[in-house]
Length: 258
Image 1 (tube, rainbow, N blue to C red):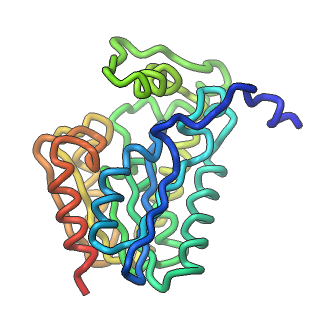
Image 2 (cartoon, one colour):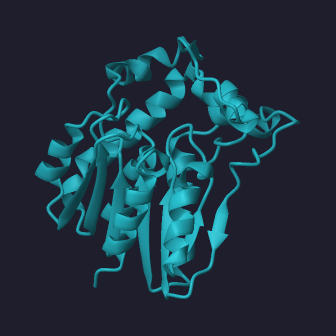
Image 3 (tube, rainbow, N blue to C red):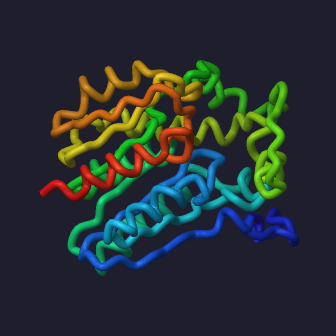
């Protein structure tokens, strides 16, 4: 009851954070995993475009995401990884081929799935194997003393649904949760060389969360066939930014290559 008692009574899933499942007409499915403090809405555009191409798509909501900050604080890397693995296994029980696409932390989770289950194809979109903010390496210590740290000049959105998520997640740094992300980073980077899946990597030169030199880490460690899509103008959420049409078109084309 300890965990259950910590969840606020008014907890609900944000209207733009609902899981999305759309059946396609191909016998192939795509699992799309959102990132740290993100939610399924980041993946909606790409998922719907892939579905137009015939793929069944499933976009799960990782535990603690898309609800509220207290729920977030009560989730951890075990929960995020388990949800990702269960989602993959459930799809695999219905479809012979299941491809995995991950954004940011979702890319880290995708790499872990690939190392364990060897899907034929994976897509790493701005994969957070490395963080621009070097302080993440200190979070395993800070997490015992600091609950949250307000960010300077937090964003304000026209969409009140986004403002709600910003107030609950994006306007703060969360040392204990960043420590969970750091744990996943270490697990994934340690095993990159075990990935055998064909890999499509999407990176942006203007990503302010994942440094562009993550490209070197990927090139030097993933030994399977790799294809890169380099963007010039997108921010960190490369699947839903200014070049999202290009991302969707190139990803769909790559997935359909036999």
